[in-house]
Length: 315
Image (tube, rainbow, N blue to C red; front, side, top):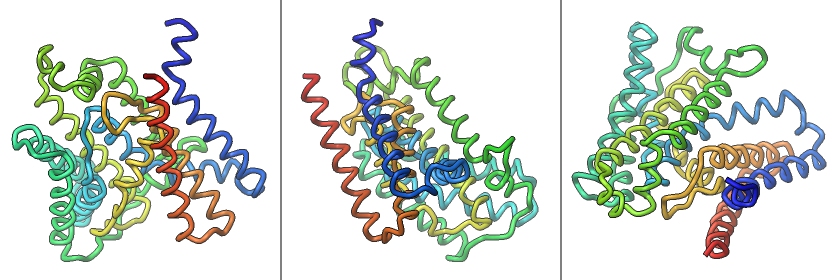
């Protein structure tokens, strides 16, 4: 790949990165408390949950779908794992159950879409309600709290000076980037999102791969639920409300096309960091949470408009 083609191919990612750097510079000027090691680590830690969910959504959106159930999966997986921990089951068993719950929910989404032929919006909207209701029924609407320190270390521990959630986030992104760019599974996700009929005619097992994409999204939502439960020392059946909106926003800001067939996890990470930095900076500046919602909504709209303008220029 020549330098010119490289720059054209990654132009959107460079633009998003420039936006992140510019935002950091502005916040550094406005508040001296922003650009400190402790605050930057705090931003990364606070961003980790949304960033992990957004990885799964990146795969789903690249393949031409959408998943509105990720926030409810965070809650349902969290309460399943937490209840087993409270019953005294070993940590690996409880973790496997929580992650398995998310994986199963994602696979059901995939099967409803591929075998049931439901539109992704409808299938995952239904699963959003089913998983939320399941979490409330499972706990009778009450939080599950109080865990051993070895579990809480997932959120409160550090390796060196880096918080464990940040390391988990980094590992997830490293694996996801490799899978998306270097494996047939990743290439098939792009192919399905770009032209599903052409992918089918080329011999791609479209139903299988689409189902597995949703399964991976559910699994990563459950992983985010594990980190959230450890951070709060409590599994809330109402946790994760509107998480799907934040994750979709991070994915879109990062350059993943809602039409499918285009995107990267590196861009998603930058998008998640932009949202985390923006929230942190507005908090440091004492901006009302209501105003924050307006600002973040405007940023999402701007990101989609930029994406559409960029596509028009490429054409």
